[in-house]
Length: 207
Image: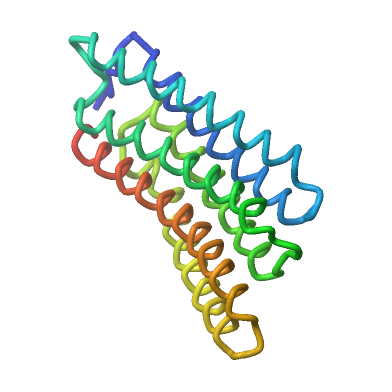
């Protein structure tokens, strides 16, 4: 069976560019965690990526509104673009919290969780790159399974972090701050899995 993709590659260019931004901001966040407290320049790089991704998202949605024939369902394009942008937004908000909360140290468990996020973002990027060439689920499945595994690892790390915060030796204000930070990095990992689910649905409908 031949898989005939549209000649117009503009949407795929945008999907892939957004996925690259996802990987970049995840890597910047992990760098922020490893180099803390020297974070000012890194936070700015994350914000710059977020701004560029917003512009790209607007371009994609504008093109979606103006294009009669699209690579696959409009609703799925909208969800894929929005899902990728949401991951970037979540990481940008998270990075800003370090200054807003006057964080004065880095927790090793948080640093570990950012590494899981990088792995999830990079794997998602690989899956998005494959979409241009094939709508077959079997071609994307190894990447989607790995994203799911990483999401489970992120859940385990988050539970360990929450347990540690409530052991009783952490100041109450610090508990509040770190609960939010840990929660946001876990949410970013969850959003990677959400986009993976969107890719799975696209392949099932179009493969």
